[in-house]
Length: 562
Image (tube, rainbow, N blue to C red; front, side):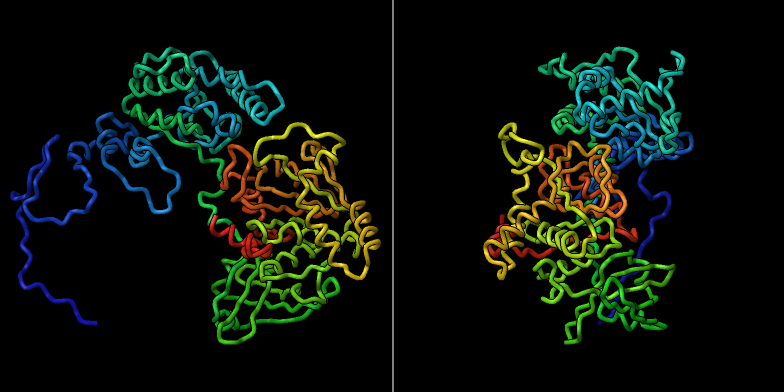
C-alpha cells in the first residue's frame, strides 16, 4: 500500500483578531474554504449556546433557547425506530423534563402507561377523562383497561388537597419507583385558537387545543402529544404541534432482533474452546447423549436450551448440540437425538431439516415445560406439535390428554354466530388440526381402512378443543396444551393461558408474527413476541424459529414472492 503524499505547503493559522465575529440573527461567512456536508445545519448564535450551558445547571429552558436547538435538524441514529419530535429531541439534549399530554387511546391500550414515562410529567385533559368514562362499560378488553385506569387515577387523587392538583401529583405515591414525574389535570379552560374548519366540539380537536394552549402558557417547556391514533398525530404535526406514538408496550423495537433459539458456531470453535474440555456420556430418557463441558470467548453469549451447530464446508462431520448448563465462564453442550432418521420417527413423522430436528428435541423432552415455535406458513409447526403430542399421550403415556385452543379472530368478514356446543363452535377454527390429523393417520398404511377409522376415533377421544374465553380459573394437570395462532394473543392473554399449567403439563405456543389478525396488535407488541423474549434462558423452556417451508413448492414460492 503506497504512503500518502505529504502536503507541499504548510498550513496557515489565523490570528485571534482575524476570526469572524458572530452576531445573533446573522450568518457568518467563513474566510477559508470549508467542505460542507450536503445537509447543512443552521448556525446557533453564541448567546444561545451560552444559555444552553446555563440551563443545564439550572434545569430551565427559555423559549428562544429551545427554539434555537429545535431549528437544528438532528438525524436519528441508524436503526432508530422510535421517531421523536423536534421538541422532544431538543429537550433530551438540554436535559429538561417533558410534559406529555396523553390521548385516551394510549390509556385504553396500556392501562399502566401512566407510570411508564420515567422522570417526565403527564397532563390529562378533561376530554380524556370523559372518553374514559364513556368506554368503561362492558366486558371487552378496552372496557377493562378503562376501568383499571380510572381506579389508578382515583388512588392517585384520593387523599390530595385541592390546591395540590394544580402543582401536580407525584406518580410514585402508589409504589411505582420508576415514575418520578407528576400528574397534572386540566383545571381551567385553555384558550387556544384552532385553525378555521376544525370542528371545536370534536374530542381530538379539543385535545389539540389543550396542547396549543399549554405551549402558549409555558413557552420554555417541551409539551408533546402522545397518541396511538395516526390521523391525530398527522393533524397535530400539520398544526405545528409535536406528537409521538406510544412505544413502551413494545417488547422489541425491531423484530429481527427476536431470539431465534439457534446460534451457528464458527468453524474454529473447537480450536478456541477445546482447551481443558471435558466429555462424558449419559443415558437419559432411553437415549444415550454425549456431554461437553468447555470454556471460551463465546460462552457468555450462549443461553440455556439454545441450539448450536457447526456445518464445516471442508467435508468434516457436522455438530448439532444444545446448551444444557451455563456456570460462570463454562458451558455444557449436549448432543441431540436425530429425529431425521426413520428409526426415531415421531408418530410416523421425521424431521426434514435442521430446525425441525431442533423443534422435535424440545417437543419430546419431558424436562422442557414450555416450548415456542415460530415460523412462516408451511414450516411444520402444527404437524410437529400434534405428532409429538400423540406420541406422548398414546404411546409413552407421559400426558393423558391433548388440549388445543386458539384465538377466534377471523381473517375477513365474520360469518356470524356458530351453532352447537363449545367444541362444535370451535370446530371451524380447528381446520388446521383436522388437516394435520388426516396426514398423520394416512402414514399408517398397514392398518387398512377400518383400522385407520378406529385409530382416528381413538385419537379424537384424546384431543379436546377448548375456547380461549373460558380459560380463567382453570388448572390443567398432565395435559399437552397446544396454543395455535399465538401471535394474535396480547401479553395479558398469553399470561392467562400459561398460568393455567398445573403439575406435569406441557405448553406449546405456535405462531407466525408476520400474520397478525388482531386489531391494534403489532409484531413488537404481540404476546408471542413477549413470551419468547421473557422465557429465553430458562432451564425448562425452549424456542426454535423454523426457517424453511416444507408444505409444497407452491406454498414456498408464494411465501417468497407474495
